[in-house]
Length: 96
Image (cartoon, rainbow, N blue to C red; front, side, top):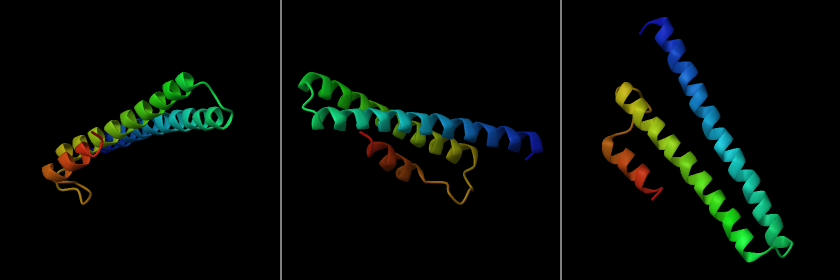
């Protein structure tokens, strides 16, 4: 593998990780708001709407993580962290 492709791969992984972390931090902030609303006797509709946003943010983060693993397995099938197709399917289905 050429040095530039290793550098590109590392940069792409860092960008993906940043996206995942941003989603998780957003979900964390939303969950903090849900907890505060429940503790403060917040409006049911507002609490459920915020909770749905948390759930969606977590789902999206999970799908990005699984899709990244799938791309890695296709690009580097001999990698020690590579998963089989059945393992990837099972991981994907845990998010369903």
